[in-house]
Picture 1 (tube, rainbow, N blue to C red):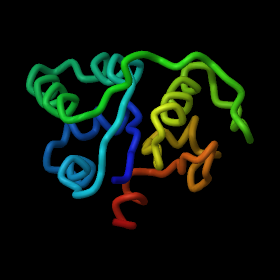
Picture 2 (picture 1 turned 90 degrees about the vertical axis):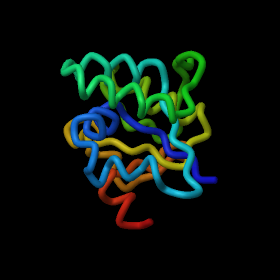
Picture 3 (picture 1 turned 135 degrees about the vertical axis):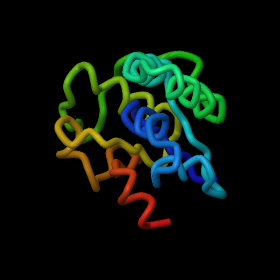
Picture 4 (picture 1 turned 90 degrees about the horizontal axis):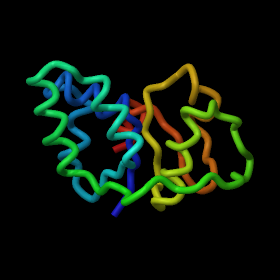
Length: 131
């Protein structure tokens, strides 16, 4: 079973566009989708519309969510993410994720296509092309 950690922007995109390619992540066989409380809080803040918020909660119900945020720790080959983005990478590492999916080109851009502490960082479209 492949473990795929989702950044908040992936959840938001799937909630806002339920027939999108990103929403197909929830139907992939052999994939376990993961998130953290930090990711869920960020996604909920960014989906104010009631219909999309309801879809977001249905998507969240299908995730495996870490019980708590991990404490900060040293990361081998640290990509020096901003403090607001570091918890996402830390949670992906602690969760045992194989892949971290993010659409955040601005902050995760330098990490895209690389593996950080065993977690491959990819855009959702790139991941889905490989499936």
